[in-house]
Length: 437
Image (tube, rainbow, N blue to C red):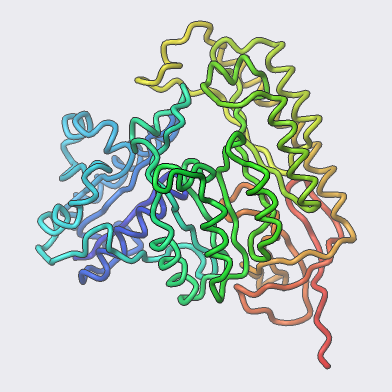
């Protein structure tokens, strides 16, 4: 059958989508890019916060319109399907099937019956069909989360943390490298907890050491590292692995001990400050990224002031923030002391404006420096290129590097770029053309 696939939400969801698409393609189905051409459409949904749920529902109804044409099957999978399966079935009759995440071990059987009966490879054995740029790919090293932050529905949706074996991950990374992937981005809900459930000890460094040996990989980047599990051995170990970037994505969520306790975030602020000092001591070129929640229940002006002072002191290289989204069935949903939405938005605006100033200052410090850039696009009219440096993750958060060059450069190449000017989130420069001997 001709199948259209829509993947919503985070990079972890994207890996699931690529696995299902790989299953379909090897099973003989044709993947199409436009819904008007599809006989079946699968929507991989996000159900993390209210805005994501609204986007998923809106997408379902938009795709349901194609049932007036040649669309025969409309299928929903993913987080929303896991969290609200019965409600979706009851309230959206246009849906032909809702497949929860817990049903993924049998999704090959379910899809085979729904589509045209062709035998499909089981989910756990299916090779991914990469949908991102061919030189960069995500490697999901664990599923679920055991942190149980009071605002987060992820453990309800995906269960507790389950790490994948090192051997399995190394084999997948080798296949990706053989297919042309040069940048490997490790993801999980909490990458720093990797291996604790499987080996009885934190094993992220052991995994990185194995991945660092894979021929063809040039950059290895780690996202979603929780502060209380980043020990000195990991920090020092990363500094000794040439392919592992000094990129520390540490979702803090707040900077006040009382608020962190309400969120069930482990570790005191004094420990976080010591961690940041330790990272910058061993990695002079470290990139520090974080996220914060503003307007969490009971957050006072004093609590928010602690947050802004922490941001000023730390001067994060990258920072994102969002207002608190109450999620049913989480402990924080019943907390007293709700913060007015207008106040939440005002605090968010203040925080992001502060970070914009910090980001511009740090970007301007890059002027005159030469950095390595992974080339990802070209503006044919202007003759300029765009790419990402070591400090830019591929998730549309960190900004880009725009640069000129007198020569034609193959996309997916690594080049040296001298930074000539800076914007709050992007850098501008010119290639340092290699001299031919």
